[in-house]
Amino acid sequence: MASYLFEEMEDSHEVMGVDIHPPVHAAAIGKVKQVDIRDVEGMIEAAHGCDAVVHTAAQVSVQRSTEDPSGDADTNVLGTIGALRAAQAAGVQKFVYISTAAVYGDPQCVPVDEQHPLSPKSFYGASKLCGEHYVRAFGSTFGLPWFIIRPFNFYSPRADPKSPYSGVITKFSQAAKAGMPLRIEGDGLQTRDFLHARDVARMVHLAVRSETVGEVVNCGSGRGTSIRELANVFGEIAPEGVKIENVPPRRSDIRDSVAEVSRARCLLGFETEVGLREGLLTFFE
Ligand SMILES: NC(=O)c1ccc[n+]([C@@H]2O[C@H](COP(=O)([O-])OP(=O)(O)OC[C@H]3O[C@@H](n4cnc5c(N)ncnc54)[C@H](O)[C@@H]3O)[C@@H](O)[C@H]2O)c1
Image (cartoon, rainbow, N blue to C red; front, side):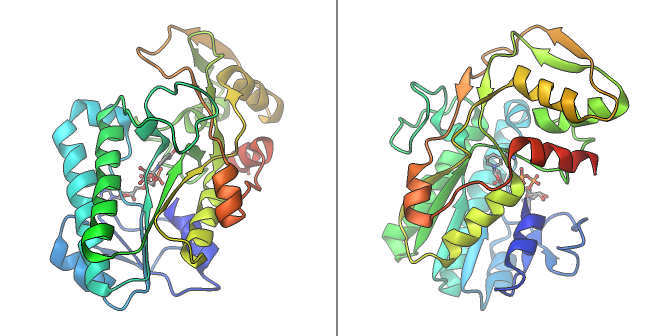
């Protein structure tokens, strides 16, 4: 997602980033320092002179968090503290934390609004929620102005297709391109709120520019799409069509996850712009 953020903000801000890996996308090349977010001194040095910090770096895989809960917490909790200490030292006007819808756990009702109980099911959701608590505590302890964004399922043709932890859209696009079947887990009627990473970057930009602080906002399209519908859209747009394979359901999968988006509309004037079909077409360009 960070490469879209560089593109989104390049005309209005001077943007630099940190990452443990060198950037691969042209928009970020030459603008990213190799710093580990857990390295507090390195982070303070990197953030010196910044007006705002957007904290996107994370261990992002639910599966990996199950395999290595300590490693997940190390990056997502201690790393968030590193980013917060750097932002505090720089005296920024805004700290934007990219959280996740995983902090809600199993939705008790859909669409999920920001008042929904916070009960993460995964270690990943727990570590990201812990990050949210640290963000608020830096606000109350040091007066750091913060803003929290909880994205639902975002996708990007720039995501690493070789990663064993990639999301369903990356997996489906890879399978469609390779002539392999799209594997639908369970009945395929489980729904997700998909949005393009370009829209997430746009919301982050709006949050950086907004004078609103101390708010938590969902980032989604507000529309649920079942996995079966998703496979059908791939079938319509993939040049060679697609084959479908039905496989057993994933254990303890969330059934429906759709964002309630009126707060984002009201506080930031945000609506998604990239429709699902249009967004999926970017995988075949
Ligand atoms: N992809 C989604 O659907 C989704 C949904 C909700 C929230 N999010 C959140 O959005 C943010 C971006 O996710 P993404 O999907 O673009 O993933 P991504 O893997 O593209 O981005 C995460 C980046 O963090 C970097 N990183 C990891 N550990 C680091 C460390 N110790 N120091 C410095 N950099 C480190 C990685 O190298 C990577 O470039 C994350 O905070 C994630 O939790 C993602």
